[in-house]
Image 1 (cartoon, one colour):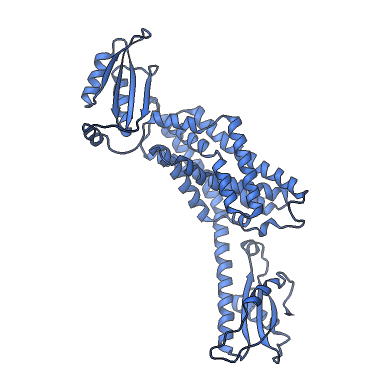
Image 2: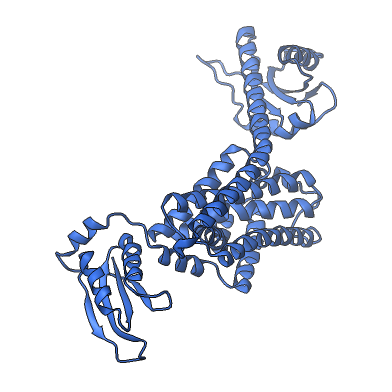
Length: 458
């Protein structure tokens, strides 16, 4: 429920009260004893969804734009007369005036915005290098990116060009500053003892997650933008929703900066693509939701101009997402192909060992070193096989090459196979289970890359 207070200008008392009576609004009237421009103040309760309608009626009744209207949220209203009002104005959507005010409040001063953004990027980059999801989420609480994203969309829908322009600029310049901050921090940390020499950030899971953007990332950004717009329209949970928007933008921006610092252009480009896709998707979803909610310009005569501006901006964003989606589609396809190859290879080996049924010989593990980037660059998949054999069993010297030939023929591609052997002992009991739990961990020490098929004996 909202409590609205409106100063009535001289000569407009009667039409204003008639408008309120016509809408079935209960009001209190107070004589104005201040400046002579106003003769009275009227105060009345109304549901949030009814504020916009009532303000339009009062404007038609003679309350000009340069008058004063104050809309206050109320804690509790006790009255049996409210049911009729709520039934007349159903829904929870706030008025365009209140939406405009909230969007202004969400976009902080430039100094505050950049200070919090740089600090959140520093924390996020640290969390990436530490592979700490908790640290990254903590950084998102600090990030102030929800305000510009929402204000850009609200400014477009309500025809406030200054607000829309500032929102777009803060997003673009802010994310560029985040990438630069990540790059500078990465360069500084490389020359310190805080990062081990020769570390490959591509092997850090939190970093790798931001360098393989796919269509699921697009859904995250679209959902974040819708949630942000909905939280402002309904007046609930905007802080938590801001975390979701920041998660889609700041960590990939920090990753792009780290890629620049560590001299990894593929990491920097992949993360930058993710930043751009998420940025466009957040703005697209927020714009669409505000438009579909029926918000109109503050100046009713500018509706046609706003419609054209909205259409052109939607087209530009949609084209940008479509172009970048080519990258997302490529990564999604490559990820599916590599995962399918790994699953098929593991199933092939498991079936082969079961059919062979060699006494005392066990398949310990099969791992496949094959990433989406390897598929794109045409690198050969590497299959690492660990086999346990009894001491008195001689391993075939050409086993790796034989499996290499079989897999290459089966999947119609060149494959590198590495085989490691473990000496196994099987206890004499029914349904024996070889104790290879600790040996599986040792299988990770098998070299991960090789130019040709080979046999390694452990």
